[in-house]
Every structure is written in structure tokens, then in C-alpha cells.
Image (cartoon, rainbow, N blue to C red; front, side, top):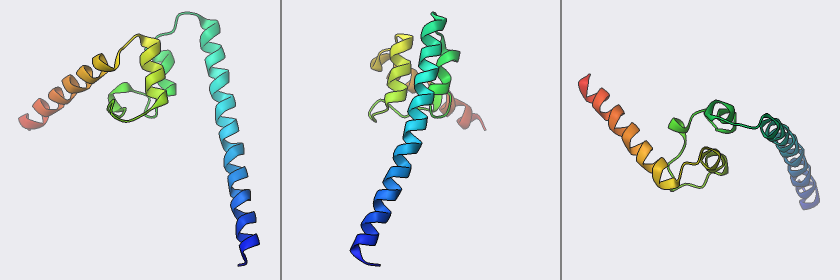
Length: 100
């Protein structure tokens, strides 16, 4: 394959990804507008913004995650509080695993 064809293919692939991301962003914006109109927002309303629908399954604070950070901010949970909660969750899991 010549370099021009390779570049054209790369551009087409990038354009498809941009279109996919545009759809994702439009849907996220629609959901955020719905939340704003609803007024009071709780954890159940925010779960859909998380990768696995639960803060329990989110990455630790040392990794960047705009979705997790958005939900934490909406809930008024600091990074320090979140880290403490994850540590408590780990302790619970450890205790239950050791019992088996």
C-alpha cells in the first residue's frame, strides 16, 4: 500500500472515531441537561456517568478519570474522602475473603 493510501485510511478511521465521539458527547449533554432540569440530583441519578455504574468499581484517585471526578464533585465527596472509602471497601473485601 502506498503512503498516500495509508494516510487516507488513517484519516477515514479518525473521522469515524470523531463521529462516534460526537454521538457520545451529544448523549452526555442531553443527560446533563435532564439532570439540571430535575434540580436535586442523587447518586442513583449519577451512576450512568460511571464506567461500571458504581463508585465501588472506579479507579483509585491516582488515575485521572473525568467521569469519576464529576460524580464525586456532584456528591460533594473530596478525593481524600473517596480514597478513605476505597480503603474501607478494600478492608471489607479482605475480611470476607479471609473467612472463606
